[in-house]
Image (tube, rainbow, N blue to C red; front, side, top):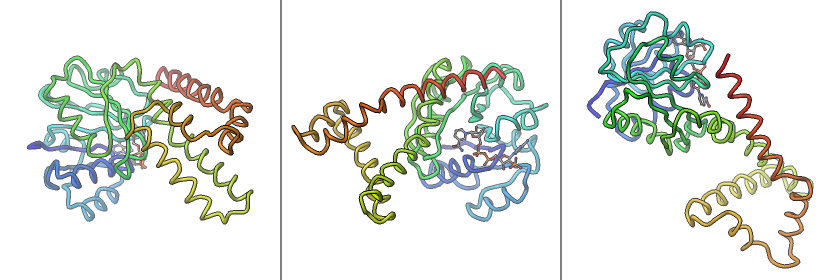
Length: 266
Ligand SMILES: NC(=O)c1ccc[n+]([C@@H]2O[C@H](COP(=O)([O-])OP(=O)(O)OC[C@H]3O[C@@H](n4cnc5c(N)ncnc54)[C@H](OP(=O)(O)O)[C@@H]3O)[C@@H](O)[C@H]2O)c1
């Protein structure tokens, strides 16, 4: 891309996106600018990636074609107050729960994309969902898609679906960590050493997820294929069903979506 990309807030997510952009050679280091209220953060990123630092938000916004807001939602007010963005630029916000309406309240009628990434972005295995406002033209949306493709998969959905997305892929890594930990505990209970149990559990989750993605089969069919009559797997599965794991997961996503809804109203 022949554009300058500026980051307001250069924490974990900002760094993950910068790393993805450079690893995929989407832009050169000199096309990336960063500003953070912790000067040591941007100095560190400058040292690691050779990017450019901006002295303040105004300089960053002036020099960038795409401005990525990567601060925590509670810092948004400080990050966006009195910022003037020209209408030919794009603003991308990754602040969880901050609506396009609220962002327009700060920035006025400019093209804005609200994005919901997740933490596996830190290792290039994320999935992000983008919701553009009406002012984002197709070409500009494609630029945003390229940015998030550098840290994993990306989808475009209407903003009304972002609470559900937050509850599933945003919070989802934590649900899976819990499952991995529980599987490893199960192995340890059966006499396996903890590191072996953890390796078996994590790679089993990776492998099962890749089977769903690669074969494109319904997970129920894949499950049936490994479940032989009277065998070990059905013995385990029947306990999971008896304990309501399926319903618990559905309700976990529902509870997280309700929480996301109430947070975005605050
Ligand atoms: N990490 C995730 O998994 C994830 C997933 C989806 C969405 N998000 C969203 O991504 C955003 C960033 O998350 P993160 O994990 O990268 O947070 P983070 O590591 O805390 O990074 C945010 C950075 O912005 C700085 N900052 C605070 N106020 C600022 C201001 N006014 N101007 C410039 N910089 C400022 C922070 O400094 P201080 O530390 O001094 O405040 C910090 O260095 C959040 O809104 C979060 O909701 C994160």
